[in-house]
Image 1: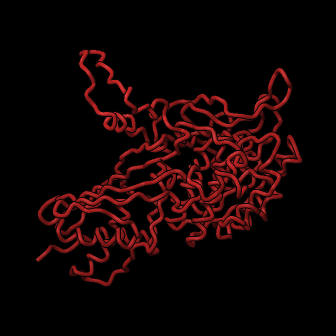
Image 2 (image 1 turned 180 degrees about the vertical axis):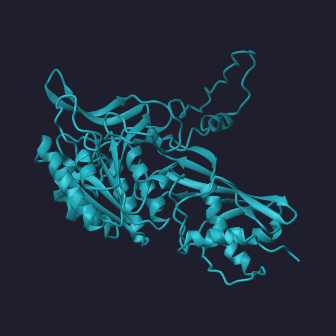
Image 3 (image 1 turned 135 degrees about the vertical axis):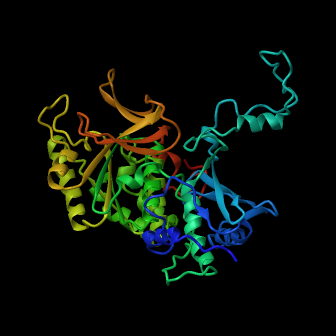
Length: 473
């Protein structure tokens, strides 16, 4: 007779709540099943089948590998895919566990690493080893594989991938299959049973620290450097991970308020060609000084948020910029619009993204000691405001900067200097605010410039890169 299941996992299910939702917090320890591996494994197979994640299995070894699944599946211009390697482990004769390895891949040829597209013609020559003098006996195909070696979760490289153990996914599977296994076990009292999700949503690698900072009723201000590919992806992944855990999320974007109706219509649409054309008709996307807020990555983020809503997840978006104003008048107007949105739906988590001057919660700027940024004004009127500044590894961004020769704004791809803190997205808060009033940072790894969406043909049905292609991010 198999041993009874420990009651601890039942308590965990009670804490998880609604069916099909991920817990807000993922334990940093392994999930252990109180059943033998052979009895647990059929439920693992069924979980991935029900989640519409096709897989190949090495029969007899308790190992399966899913097919590639696109992040925010079906995205018109996204460029990331994930697959899972699932390994059954025998903890003891009566206990078992899973290891799940997530592999991330990007197929953006335009951002391929220099030297990867080598000439594999008859002139291909093997390079002698620098130390031993021996010839490199790798074939051209082997060398190509070596050049495609994984370079990190957030890397924007052709055919890059990174294998990372995914505890979030391990616990997601555990919560999905343990109730079914429990039905075969003797339990003393009737317990609520959570169900596995009917549709699997790929939200990317878990953002470290996100779920500790996000709370219903809270307002988080993200101060960004406009014009990167990484920040819009960070936002989309954050919203996805929170919404699938059951938290209602509203995103505030620093886009002109005149676009509110147009963006709302797009988010409620089917995302077809006509819907994209209506979205991109706004003059905002064709600004003579595109500062990064009308980038391809921002357009892609709107598509990803639209997809989350289409799945029935509680995601909302509003815009709050008043570009016709400047200085303190603009800060006051930004504050008023955001404040009205937050007070109208105080039970939601509000994620408000802006340039990193607006999100400061400290008074004063180097050129104006009396300046009151939006973050400073919001802090005085709302009870729960957290401001995070952007941290990143060096790279590039699409930036508009003053040209000293012409006294005009010069917009384009420019170098962005940062500090390398690894490949994983994360949030981190300090014990106290810094002089700008930031409570901490959100880190997006190596940054890459994202060009204006119109330069990529978005909204133009005759363009080669129009929505529907996969040349994307």
